[in-house]
Image 1: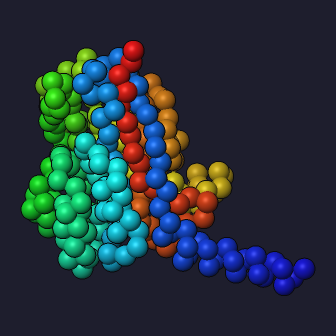
Image 2: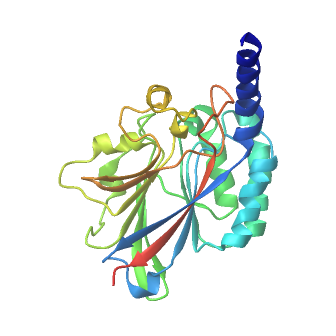
Length: 266
């Protein structure tokens, strides 16, 4: 019995450190709203979060190659590109490959690790690859004959968020897509604010997919750990992220690439 336990623990350790962190799951969700016009029906958004990139390896190549198949209309990044400035060249390599696979519009916000490593250099790289960094600002994006707001609220973990600036001149009667690194941004929302879709990351889903453990490990003051939540502030999606931080271990909580299809309400 003792040997079985030892083998089981060893298998979990090997799987958690070397297998699951490199096996990305593609999550497909649909978001339906009366605010989504017919010309936006099936508009596809790929949500990438928490790369924590250290090398251009199997999972990073999977992300890039997936874009060729998915053919999204938009790609959004919700922060934590790197942990340390020494990985800037690797991020450059990833973004170069990203642009070879996808030429369309891309938007981003920064995360806490970005600010703790090299935010200015990351911003320059994003600009070099025509990825629009939204730092407490918004853009009114037009596709075919329809338009909607893409709102970027800067990282709330490091205190760079400024919701008033991010919402300047936003008409909430239009469809609103909000990007912010951490779900903790909801603690700054007033009760009269309701967005359509809020995309976040930061938590990594706790990295261990056991409910009572993931809630303790997920670095958030909110109840939003991973996946889709219908809240008083609108629909929130918390991406489990691509990379890991602190410890390179995942168990029952694989890295994630999220594909979101907008659907017009008939």
